[in-house]
Length: 259
Ligand code: KIV
Image 1 (cartoon, rainbow, N blue to C red):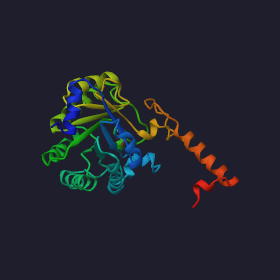
Image 2 (image 1 turned 120 degrees about the vertical axis):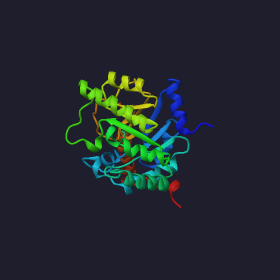
Image 3 (image 1 turned 90 degrees about the vertical axis):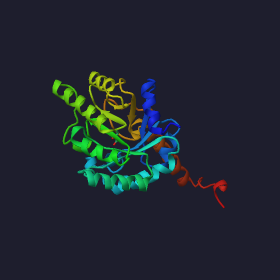
Image 4 (image 1 turned 60 degrees about the vertical axis):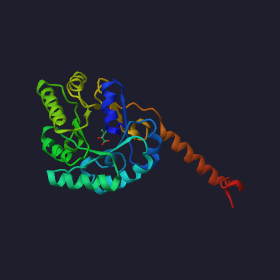
């Protein structure tokens, strides 16, 4: 029987796009699970939920608690947890923390940011049977200041290609490409055998991921690659306004809602 991870590889072979989304809680995870191949508990929760100015402020216990909640809503998809900043500085620390995350959250694998700099760590984790996804291009844990898309210059392009190759050789089972120029994303996707998951990196990637809160219109992000598929902020405001009116007028709770 195919494992959930080998199903992703098969999708790349068959040219069938891979659908990925983030979740930080059970309620959202339950809604996504039937439609996504992969659900990521991203450290983007730092900015989306906690209003942090950087994902560097997210710690391991935050990731574990949110992932436990998401785990309750994910039955079918592959569940991946982002390892936060400073939790994989060297091989032994990375292994200890990844084992803790896998054990406590019962996730299917973890994601690390970085290319050649982290390949020794990736090899070590894979040796100990931890399934790993890589993440290159814009890597928010190492960005200070403005975000700028990658792959504009020849040197950036060469480095991205080298990073993706070395991650593949180290044993990752997929690579997130964040904000990489489209021709470079295409070249990376064609040169590695593992699936590439794009975010702001064109439709040449084998799959796509978006932050669910962005696509639902719950955030104020005006990032170029974010397509808003709903305006839940409006829906929430309207519902809350109606509740307020009902409470003020005394029409809530009516007999139907009273014991
Ligand atoms: O933290 C996150 O949500 C991510 C995805 C957007 C790829 O890393």
